[in-house]
Picture (cartoon, rainbow over the protein chains, first blue to last red):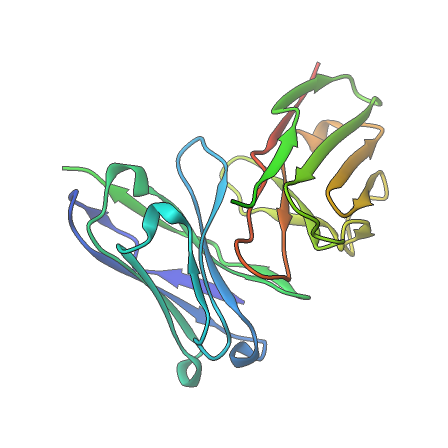
Length: 113
Length: 108
């Protein structure tokens, strides 16, 4: 099971940190991901982090602004989002896309002045 | 850049019709492809994994095929409860784990 938190209303240029708590599986052996879905739009993979945090990848539109990280001791995944833009407004999902596929319920991020 | 091209973007079909959605990868992804169904306001649910394996609990009218770059999701006998948006995705492999653009399925 995956449970996101931290979504909020934030002004353009602001920052937000999303968290995802994992349970029921061996979190530390899997790469993890963040996916987002803007209102009325499709699904967009945002970032991934390997099990040991040695490999990190981002979609081009968030590079330099978002940072994915994890704490395997706490079974937790994070997404630090800085310099937020209107186009970052979306529901953000924590997800596992390995032999097992799991999605969280999502946390909404609104970017508006 | 790696891309997943899904078509059509929308379709309208009658109850009982056979519906086909295609997904094309810009590079060979072997069978590292999944299909999801997403109803409005809900989290995507897994239909097909490894390109052609039916997820437990998914009705048998759903099937997937393909390998390499070209993939297909088929609904054999569209039902009213199948109204949703369907997405393909590259998975269980190196990032980016790109999604197709989605196909919105409606009843005629």
